[in-house]
Image (cartoon, rainbow, N blue to C red; front, side, top):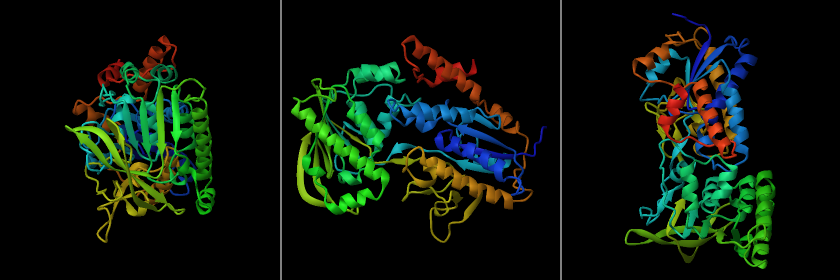
Length: 483
């Protein structure tokens, strides 16, 4: 038995939240460990249910985001740390239980992210042709257990949502397949699917006004450069009052977004004046309508299928409050995609806050509690949450870094107060977890295994003059990793 005196931390989820937290924990321990009486050494075991790491970066963001490559390579550098041990293809609650982790680790941190859509909740939401963004994203990102084919036979499509996921979905639905293949790692089934896409008209419906949308400037710039696509806006949506302009100017990111939207307005006018062209002045064969202050109220159907969408005009005040006008319009569409938020995953044995859609934790400080709220909610020692698991599905990938720093600070504080400098796990043999998993026939994929998958994807991409081409079959991933 090789007992060690280093701190032992289990992290559930190898997406950005889990990887950033692991990195920040080791850095902060190196800085503060001695004065907190914890020492400076820790072993972090990172458990991921999928056969490969990076969660949201690999499977939740559209493949044509240029910044994603940089984030993925930064995460990879972090994982290439001898104090961080990757255990992919190991599912918490199925392959290993909470009690088994608490026996072997001084603290357990949940960074489980989100994979499900919030329900649409409109009449007609159950019609054939209504899709949640999460499942569509899984398809075009090649999620290991996602759909392999997607019905793209609707010529007129609606997308509901005022955030970045809605923008991603709309952009992929308007994409040129060859252009997408050239610059991304999409697998063949996605290329074939998008090549056969019949969508010619897309309506993006945003409930609030121009100044209250939640788009990043990067998303807007990507929308501006879609070959063969004409952007169409409603001039009236851009008639902002002085109070709204003043309010938008107070926040730098909002101001930048609004400025970019006004640039898009000019661009849309130029496209129309030039005879319905795309951004390069070429004839456009697809039309992309952007509707602000437009709240869908019903999906219209016939014979169980989508045939249209009914939308109510809204008004938004400077402080972001939305009111309905009682004015309705109907648009013919044969498919509706809703991107109105994700529902973060639950975890076996951990209370869930349904109202706020995250794991139950104390005042948002990441310490897991016995129940969602109320006087009976007690902090459960040694259990923590970060990222979307802690705060719900809001914020960009970068937000997980500030989250991680807060949680790690709390973890170190708690560990310093615990007996024997935080070393409370009974079983301190680092190989104990490997024996447990092996006894169950579970074969984890480690960092070296992931590197084999990555090398294969790069080699397959190189054959087509691309940097990378995704493997999507989990059995193929396992075969490559264990070879």
